[in-house]
Length: 288
Image (cartoon, rainbow, N blue to C red; front, side):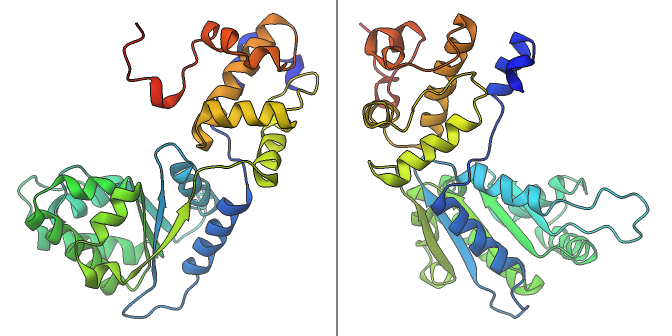
């Protein structure tokens, strides 16, 4: 049990990234699973996962990536990499795209290597590794370049998917969807799916109950009670990343104080100020 661990080890464990498998995220992950086994064809289906900042997109991609990690057995003759994931490079074009993918594969080349040479190397490596999907996180970075560079980047992405006959998955804020829509032909190739902000309801209560189970506190906190849930939703402003951050801060205080549960008093404004919590929308304001 986590309560038997040394104090600082419990705190460290509390703040480690944790996958919470709630309904919408599992639905999207199931869609990714279907894409992974989709029969190869010239125009593969692609996916765009869209959500606000800090609303679980990267955690979803990383969870899927872990489920399809390379087999670590050193006796296996053929090494495969089913899924390749990178962060969309800043100021992207096709050269930066291919370079970022090669760097993730630790297949470094000359800084002066032209884009077509990088592409040929990348195609050969991914075919040898039997890669079945490419995922690009933080896709809103695609808007950072000039319109010409954006077009080259998107065309490079489309060409790579066509040549390898594998699906491409992108993930980003609503600006990421705008990046795709700068080219209607490319936009038509990506089906958008959304991770909306949380709202009051049974699904949010189930989320809080699931989070409470992984905190490792000795006593129940009742996070899914109406009053607690309403306050947590209001303070987090509806994103799962902020929900997790707030609850972890409260759980750490509960552990250090020896109370071993999150009480309603703990989420009153006076205590939230004490633990250094501010609503996301107020963090850029001068606290005068």
